[in-house]
Length: 68
Image 1 (tube, helix red, strand yellow):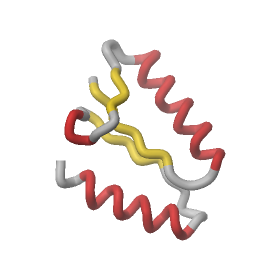
Image 2 (cartoon, one colour):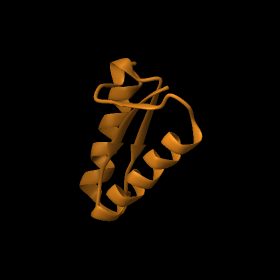
Image 3 (spheres, one colour):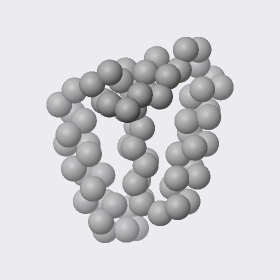
């Protein structure tokens, strides 16, 4: 399974993102982190709604990802 991952917001989100990625790698066979949503089977956006810029950026990412 190819996974595309976007982590937005504060540094805590980046730590949470690493935990989520580790979970995928530990729980599923053949997980590969990819750099582009074009080659992804799954896209994950981890964001924080407390930071206005991150909220706006996450909305933009979601609008972009639905194209795939």
